[in-house]
Length: 244
Image (tube, rainbow, N blue to C red; front, side):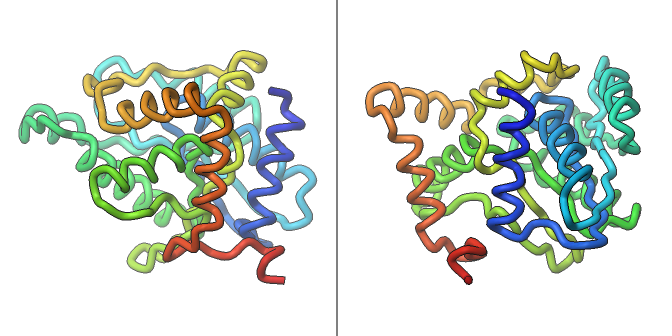
């Protein structure tokens, strides 16, 4: 995927759900994976022509795994001219050594987001951008249906009252396949996830399930995504066009 197309999808999401306001200081959550690096690219290039002025800060919550080398990410941030901050934590030790969690993902996600949100709030940011794409949103809906018995997914924009932070998801219209194409075309410096649970999670199950559904029912992903965006999920803001 070309950068121009990534920017088109990103601006559409930002405009549809009014994700960016004048004077925003936006932290971009960087895991080191292709999705967050694509988000950083998109927001940095959007910053250059978007009519509303905003600043960026790239932030990584380092969970404490051995061999997690973030130097390629730092080099990319330097190249793009985005300040980069690494938050050191002992989350890996807590989850895998002290607690010995057999299903670590939920607790890890909460602790990681907590550490990240605290750091970005202390840095003076008023918004944090997560790199959840279209497939993530659909997979979350499937997980919610299967394991919680409710129709629910990530919101494009939400406000965290306790942290006084707004979460935005500018890649919501981009598919994972398109991000993979962007990664290959622009040689993103992806850092391998060192987590021992990577690839054996419920989310991986949902990813494989969605792939099978799409294979057997072409167009199913697009229909499911439309059902989510038009499903009036509690907490979802209306699209700007609909509001107008």
